[in-house]
Length: 171
Image 1 (cartoon, rainbow, N blue to C red):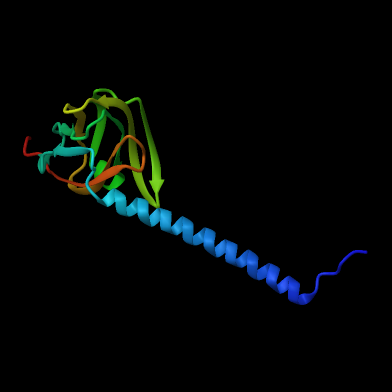
Image 2: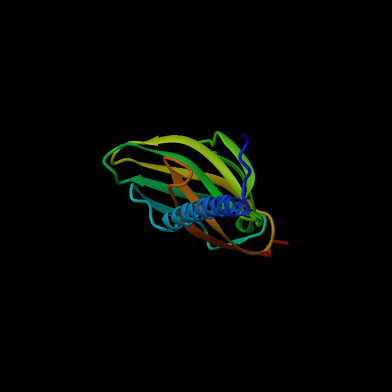
């Protein structure tokens, strides 16, 4: 004999499904909040120094450096450097030293980002200085976030970048 599902049993099944969905959503939101919070903290295994000109003339070189110092007890790996499009809009980034393996654009929760993938090992007590070759191409005040990710894509330090590109004074 086939057992019929009663309305009371259907209600409990629907409530169970809703409860599972709520738990899944809370877990996802919690994980996102945790990774977001952790990315706002300084890296525990590296110190970061960024050298960027605060003011430059349009058409001038705007090369900048990022130094990652390994302060941990084991080797670390520079995974990626991601820059907000709001900053990159004012400059044209060419190559880097050492050279990035891959370059791409993506959206991070609606914020366009420029991603540079590296695979650079930094030994214990050593540092790595990256030099980006760039040129100021548009006048304005350009501000954006830079995510420097070590060992994986979620272990990042966020640094605010800002440079002002002024009109060229040359005729």
